[in-house]
Image (tube, rainbow, N blue to C red; front, side, top):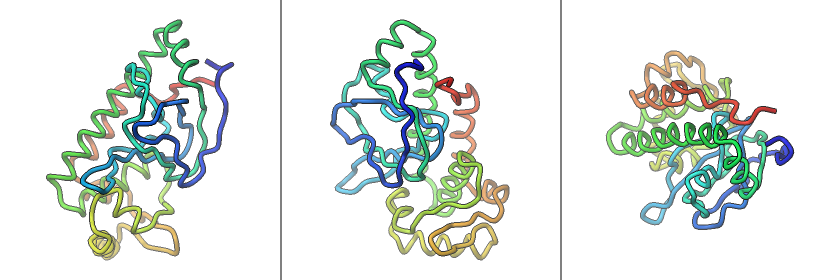
Length: 216
């Protein structure tokens, strides 16, 4: 695949894919976080995130030609980009490439299904702890530049509810709100505060580790 790959920067708030638009290229994320959102009852909610485990535009491996999600860069980083046509040829010539992508798709399906269940069954505090824990794991850091409005959209909750929940987590010594940055103070305790969905989603990626989909 190497001759067909271009290293690209993922800029914050950059839109990589739009729903019902033709998938022109696939981005194998090397660093950063991409949020995949879906439209529901006139508003958007996050279906899942993509980090170094996977790719944006992956549904071409299933024969799809248009995107189901709006894919927006949440945390800037970089990716290896390949055109949909070139990836299709590579998967036809090297079945192991398709197998790797399909393993990621399976993990992503677990992620998005569990996120949907989590939004219906669990309270906001463990849901927020779950989301923050997964993102901190993916970035391997404790600081995240994110606003209350972004968290509100991601979790499908009112901004006021997100603010109150962050205050409770801050009172417990789990996070600290700084100017433009949310600092996680105790990741281990935050994981324990998270709902069981955290482990289900995390284990889905670790069971058949999909990191290194593209070897450079």
